[in-house]
Image 1 (cartoon, rainbow, N blue to C red):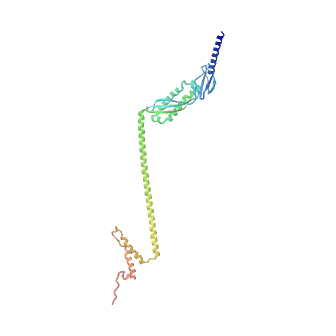
Image 2 (image 1 turned 45 degrees about the vertical axis):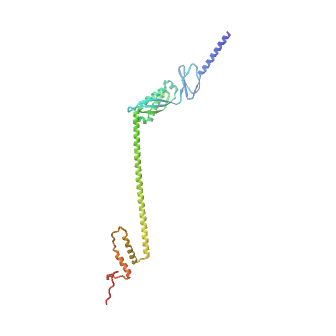
Image 3 (image 1 turned 30 degrees about the horizontal axis):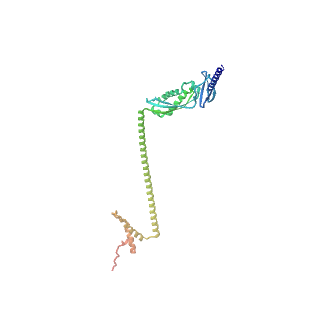
Length: 313
């Protein structure tokens, strides 16, 4: 009997120890950072657990699965969307959201990730359905802003804050892609032709401007050269004139120099006709007077080559 009582006592002690361990395990909970836990007492919401150590009442309190309070990124599969011009495009979306109220995220919605996905799909079809293909491809910021506004307003009562919505890809049909590539290729060729024409035009303008500047500079150079030559000739004439007046030449010397200059007028192979100026006679008359030593009386009709009158017997 003593042995049976000892065994029974040992079993009771072991059961008690196991019970105590289970109670301790179920009573003590450690909540990690950026996590939150919802506690139900007898099936009813009791409180929300913050990060740290907490004590629960075993078999009375129940801790639901922890919720992640960090910002989460969910990429949804491509969704077919019909644009305003009746083209089907495939759009991939990425949603950034964060749980702000663990109680609402637990009790207000059964599966908030699935709810966000479905709401994103329906909102995306409403927004893109009012745009044509070109507007849908070039208005990503506008679409993102509208999606974020609708999702944030709808998910606010679920304890979720949508911080950002991005369109990861917009894929039009393959036939439309081929047409767009041809259009872009034609546009690039047109721009290349325009740039080539603009370059040729600018080159021609610069060349003409350079030639004009060169002509202007050449004309200015010729004008300055002509002015300098004229100034030189004028100075030379002035010096000769001054030298002649300083030497005080008489009529004889001037007539002799004038006669020496006359043959130079006939120089050159292009001279076919030589016109003798009327002053030649005066020059010859002056030379004759110089050689004869007398100045004949004009009234007597004598000249340089007149014969001396014969004496009367």
